[in-house]
Length: 283
Image 1 (spheres, rainbow, N blue to C red):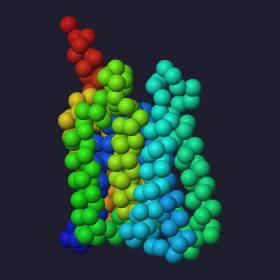
Image 2: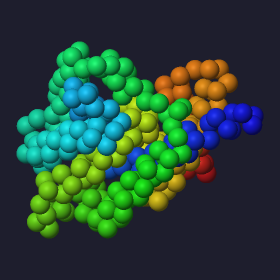
Image 3: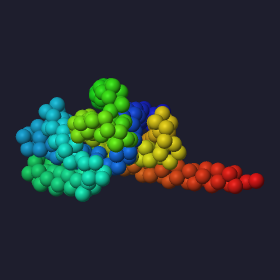
Image 4: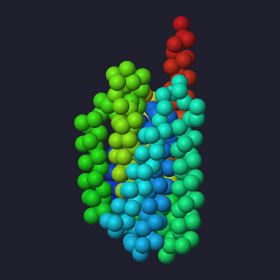
């Protein structure tokens, strides 16, 4: 047990820092109905990291992160520029997000074919290296996320209104596309830092699954955050413990455990709903 705690303490701390930021953003993403935007932004960041290899740069160096962030910001600009009000949309924005993802993925494969260690870089982007994360890396990620969190705190009214009540933002005459770009830009910063540590699959899981679990039981913002973080802590701890016990890849195993926790939450929701229905129908 002591060996497991020593090995898994840093990965568990990294999971909690990631969830603290991504679970909050997940509420916005589900409300906006752009579920796969993080996959698309992550793939844009991956394309930037892969392009940095063409110039002989380390993708984990400050310059490599700069390449990744620049491509993620390009994705943020595309998503903000293509946003239309629901009644005016001829093409769902999710289609645009999917196209960006596919094109970025294809471009990354082409670049990786010409870049040194390109194939290894693509694999690392997908699964990450959370098992080998260090405490200094966690501290840097925490500081970046604190900065992003401060921005979202001061702009919470604008971001939440646009996510949850787009019509009200339009009535107030807000420049919605500009606020969208700012939102997606901060999102791009979060993704750029998260993907090298956790990988695309785990980042998507942290973003979407805890929020979906929370939405099964409540619509109150504080309750959403509490349930998201609690579910994430349980799933992350179980995934890390199972990874250590059975010597399985950490990131993919945590993703699978999150899926099981979601199924369990769905079953609990059905039981609670059925019980409430029986009590309501009782004389």
